[in-house]
Image (cartoon, rainbow, N blue to C red; front, top):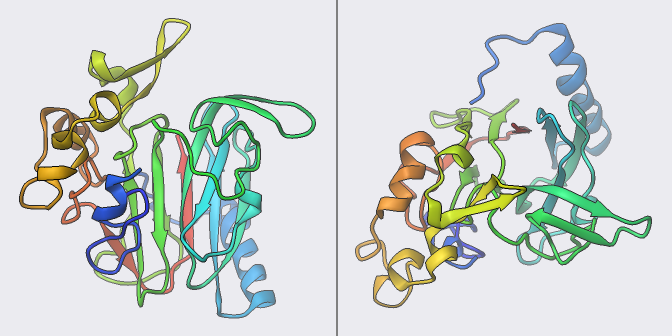
Length: 269
């Protein structure tokens, strides 16, 4: 699994241990898709050489979001850790081939001209640019460990849920190199005890660990191993509607995917 900085059991740096701390298919490439995604990626790769990967972030939500980016230990910070992404806007982020880290959507944010403010969900210390700070849960995570020796990636609900997220490889190969997503509107299905509300409406769904902070839900103490930490009634709600996403810390077998030499499209909503 990928815990809050622990790694997937197969050298994926965001694996089960890390998780404890803390789709969308395109049937064919239309010309508009080529222009928006593939051509910019080819240009970036031609300039930077083969030792680069490209993340394409697209906002399909009706409202603005503010993606946050947290690198793994010793990895470089991308885009100063965060930026504004307007509806239908697309941003390409170039990274070294061996990079690891996570992306998450922040919502309902207000920042002043100096980049100080706050987000209702996914906030990273009240800054537009997270610069090494993680996002406050609940937030949906897109996690990556590149070139280790393959690319590992997952969509994680271990920190809860705030926005629909999908990941698709634009160039990778391999038997498990597949689009993955959590496209269910979990805010509508969120159990009462896990709900985060704004103006009377549920805008995010906590994990049971965040809501109740018990060893059973957090996979800590006597429940700190895959054999002792099992799915709970809460994590089963997440897994039922997002079967390819991490629903709890040790949900590795059905939730981790790999590609060889991938560039990735991350869609929000």
